[in-house]
Amino acid sequence: MKNRLEELRRARGLNQEELARALRVSRQTIGSLENGRYNPSITLAFRIARYFGLSIEEVFIYEDEQD
Image (cartoon, rainbow, N blue to C red; front, side, top):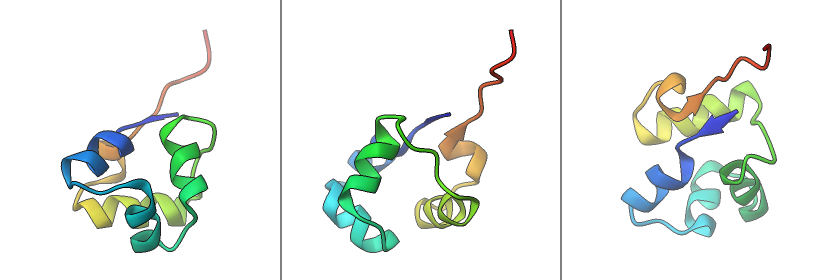
């Protein structure tokens, strides 16, 4: 699943550590999310969206894997 996390974080002038602290996760989690190596739990997805004042769909881009 793609996401706009890095774009949103940079627009707020935050580094990964600052965002991680605000969301109560590790910096490694933020890095993994930004690089697409990790998909968040629904709880974390809601926390991220609320933090940025957006809907989940505005942060995370669902791609249907069926071809």
